[in-house]
Image (cartoon, rainbow over all chains, first blue to last red; front, side, top):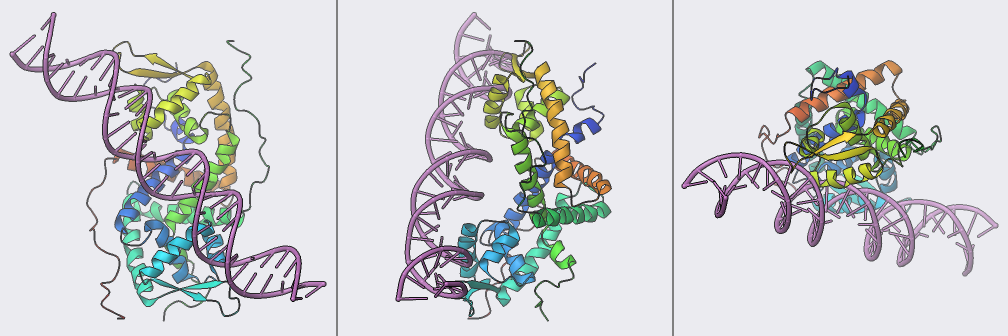
Length: 174
Length: 174
DNA sequence: GCCTATCGTTTGTCAGACAACCTATCTTGG
DNA sequence: CCAAGATAGGTTGTCTGACAAACGATAGGC
């Protein structure tokens, strides 16, 4: 009755229960590849994300940058340090508020990002090699939209789900 | 020439360069929620994945299980310990090979998983709330297929990409 | 001018990942 | 039957990376 074949399942049963695993798998591979690809970019994929935002969007301050990327401010500090040391971005004092720092990309930073993006896109196609080309775009797009929605609703922790044990009450089989 | 508008970009520019970030965002939120939802399941999402495979697929041994989930064997050890302590699975000696252990789910484990899956599915819908219902399915499906393909080609590390600096040769500015 | 909030940085703590090693068992060759 | 190597699982130790808390500097309100 119960399933006994190792890999011969109806597949919808398997798929239904491992969305998180799938995401993790794809992300892990993506990161693996990107890390290897951008190993001279200060903090690999981290540095890449930051550089991308700095170049493409004009984000006001470091704090805003952290919020935009949903990462910790303390992380930003040293990643920015290293990106700056590599001459890809600059930290400038904000004329309006001397506590704040504006982070701007250098020309070198822009060039580097452009090259990096080219390569990353290529790697992404490779990572998504299991999907026909057309669906890769769909997947990317859906991911981006889902992520944006999540990020927008970031403060989160809304109590829509009951906090209750998944485990049965142990009133069986002693 | 270069981009100067703060947030008024064509959006495909932005989106094109943060697939990794998007995945990370979605996964992080998924995990956050699931962890909170399954906090009495021994290792949260980890335990959930393992339990799911143990229940739905009849995986021969622990080693095979590790391979199936693409996680380290040393991790399996203690997660299985705790799942077993919770009475959800059992470690049985393999009659054919006394080195190996077969991991089988208990009835309680099956029930628990069923309940957990119900809840996780619900949470997933919530996490993907930014997508219209129909597209959530598409997204799940694409993720699952991409992941399976990646996993199948797991040994990886094929040298399809040149290992070459992203940084320009520094023959400019000084 | 004082008090409080905010920006960025620094430091310390903690958990999780991964490698190296160990024991028990199986397999193969003599 | 014994010895040597291979394999399954488990244990230990190290190391990285995330996050919290504390800190110095500056801004804004009173």
